[in-house]
Amino acid sequence: MQVLKCLHTAILVRDLAQAEQFYGTVLGLPKVNRVLRFPGIWYDIGGYQLHLMVGSVPELENPEKWGRNRHIAFAVADLAAAQARLAAHGCVIQASASGRAALFTQDPDGNVIELSQIEGIK
Image 1: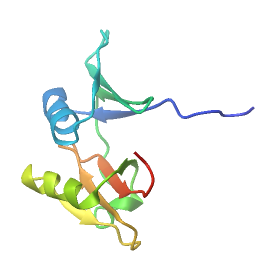
Image 2: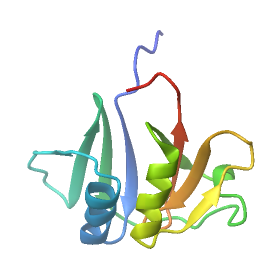
Image 3: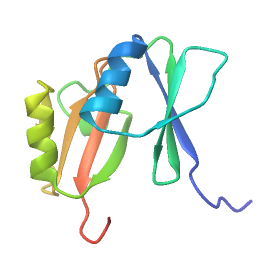
Image 4: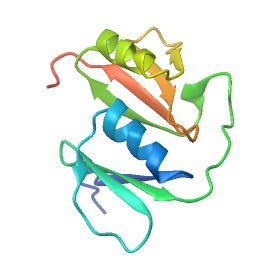
């Protein structure tokens, strides 16, 4: 077997409207116009998709260190701008303990999102 590309990640959310506000408005992800047969929303990030589906959201294994939990990571052009945007929307933020230019936040359901500044990615 040869894995060629990651196509999507699916995460569970309890409240689709709250999740849409966070992912679509706060993070600014572009929504995929698609009719689904169940409650959900798809987002496209540079040819990779994030699928949100309504379901039971598991608790964090390590509430003190968010990066040591299941999470999804996104590259951002400007980490300081991303942090300011999250703060302006009242999002909780935890700096990466690794020393990298990265931070963690949580969506309204507690799913952990990592934002990392990667030089040279646009």
